[in-house]
Length: 374
Ligand SMILES: Cc1ncc(COP(=O)(O)O)c(C=O)c1O
Image 1 (spheres, rainbow, N blue to C red):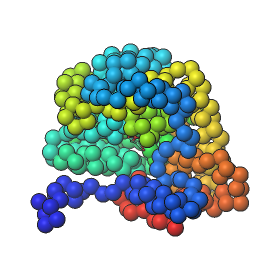
Image 2: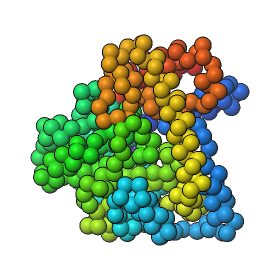
Image 3: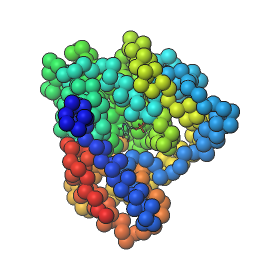
Image 4: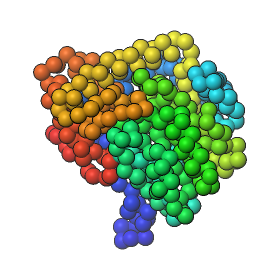
C-alpha cells in the first residue's frame, strides 16, 4: 500500500483515455456546445426500437431481480441459435455466459486463465483496456507491433516468435479495434495451432462481428471448442449503454467462470437481458442491417480523403489483406459520425485529417495521453 492508500496494482492501470474525452465532450455539451462524438466506439444510432420495447416490457413485468450468474437460459439459447444460423457453428448454450458488456467477459477470462507473472500476447495497436485486464490479475501484457504487412493483425509466425516460457495466452480481435481488419479463417487456424501446440490458450474478441464489409466473417467457434470467444450486444445491436455481452468458454472452464461471475457480478443487468431477446427477431435484424449499410456509405467517404492525404496503397478496412498506413481508425470513425455531419462538406477533409493526425498518437497504440482539441 502506498501513502495514498491505493493498491500497487493501480500503478499500471492507465485511464481509458476515450472515456476521459467523452466526459470532456459531455461537459462541453452541457455548456451548450455542439459536439460530434468521435471518441468512444459506439454507433450514433439509438438502440433499435424492438429491443427498447423488449426492455420496457421486462420492466413492466417486474423483471428487475437477479438472474442466474451465467444469464437467462432463453438468451443463452438464442445466442447459440444465432451462431448456428449465421455461421453453421454448433454451440452448446451451456458454454455461453452472459456478462455485463464484453468488458465483464474479458475480466472473467483473464481472471480464470492468467496466473501472476504469466504473459498474454496481443497486437499493438489494439484495444487499450486489454492490457489492463491482464495487469489487474498481475499478468504481463506483451504487445507485439503489427503493421500493414499483416493487416494489422498477429500472425502465427509472430506468435511463435513472441512466445516465451511464461506465455499463457494470445489475444486477437477480428474485426479488430482500431483497424477494423479481419483474420482469415486460415490465419486463425494457424494461430490456434501454434498456441495449442505450446499448451497456451487463444482468446478471440469478436465484438465487431456483424459489421464486416467485403471480407468473409467467421467465428473462432467454428475452428475449435477450446477457444475463448468474447462478444457483445454493444456494437452491432447498438446497445452500448445496456451493458450486455457474452463469453463462450470451453466446458473445462465453465465451473470456474460461473463461480467468479457469481462473486463479482452476481448477474448481468436483467432488463437488458430480456431486451436482448428481441435482438434476434426479424424486425431488429432488418434495422441493424440497414444501419450497417449506412456505416458502409460513411466508411467509403471516410477513406477517400486518406488516399489523398498519405496512403500509398489504400484498401478499405475489414478485408483480410489491407494496407492503410495512417487510416487506422477509419472504420471506427465511420461508425460514429451522424448523418448531418456528412452534409457539412467543407469541413469533411479537415476533420478527417485532424483525426488521422491524432491517431498517430492514438490511445490504441502504445500508451500516450490524448490530445484535447477544445
Ligand atoms: C475490441 C473491443 N473489445 C471490447 C470492448 C468493450 O465493449 P463492451 O464492454 O461495451 O461490450 C470494446 C469497446 O469499445 C472494444 O472495442
